[in-house]
Length: 51
Image 1: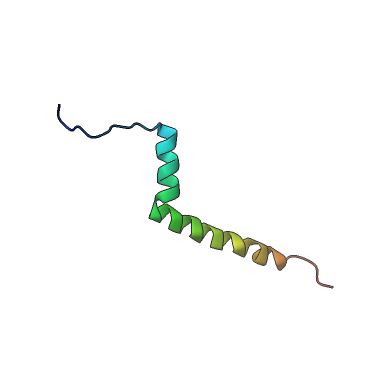
Image 2: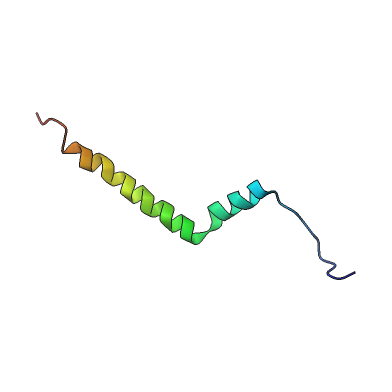
């Protein structure tokens, strides 16, 4: 028997979740997106009435 190590299988969903949560490039892009999302209320505030 070749490779007597333990074999485990994960579902496609588990693999996708793992990749999504642990990928450093995806983490960086999510952080960048959160920063961009913070700019939206600031941009819209210019259209609100002032008292």
